[in-house]
Image (cartoon, rainbow, N blue to C red; front, side, top):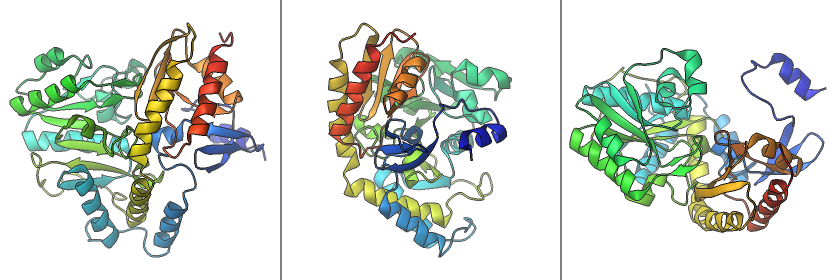
Length: 386
């Protein structure tokens, strides 16, 4: 069977395919249908922090699937209660709403901030990415994502990232929340400064707006801490997480601070949110993240990877930046052609805007594998790619 042809025949068309069929993975490696090996620096777009085919996660999933898969939150559940306690302890926030994806966590954050404050407006950052549903898309900056669906949800304002003065001016008595990423991933891999992020928290406290931190891509060790906001001693009111929360199984969560408190019944919900299968898998994933010390490894290997990439001597590179193992190379040319050549060289990576190559490898990646990636990047950037 021609797998690609069948998929192309039936696909919606919204995804641009890379021209490779991935059929197996282990750790930080993937294999295509021809048996060719790749180092995975896409990492499930951030969902594969634990790598592929983690045995403990697979076992927990299989065991729970034979016990109980569905149990809505109108009933209590053992796996769910254990995960809720674990997540709130790790984040230092007392409550959690469980859902199925990052964009669902963002939508819940917007609804809860409106209910908690009685206000309607949201301030977001230019270059920010928060999802593709209508509310999350309204907070997302990229016009290519937004314009086909105009008009979007009213009441959203965008201000330059890392510009505290602009943020301060934008927040008013009508602002229910400010939503920020600690590192803007999709927008080009731009880390926030300590001054900016702590200042944003001060602006929110002073105005009565809530601080929403979108950690859908950065949570669970990616940046060198369990949560990226922990680098800057922040106390956010709402934290959106997903992607690697359950080892790659679809799941999301919104962590809820004291300023939001207990919400009125029936204002939100989810059929699949907090299902026992996802909760059991998430618990196993968190166990593995801690057992393997992945936040520490991401911090150390991220510094190593950044330092080596910065030593590549080529006029094509404008800047190398990142935090932990969320790394971007800003080029003086479009990034997409280089991604194609990298793939041919056995390295899978992402774009982050038109001219940034983004690396999101599984946090289990070895230094030897990172060295291979660096060597491949140096080789590819030296080619006359148009």
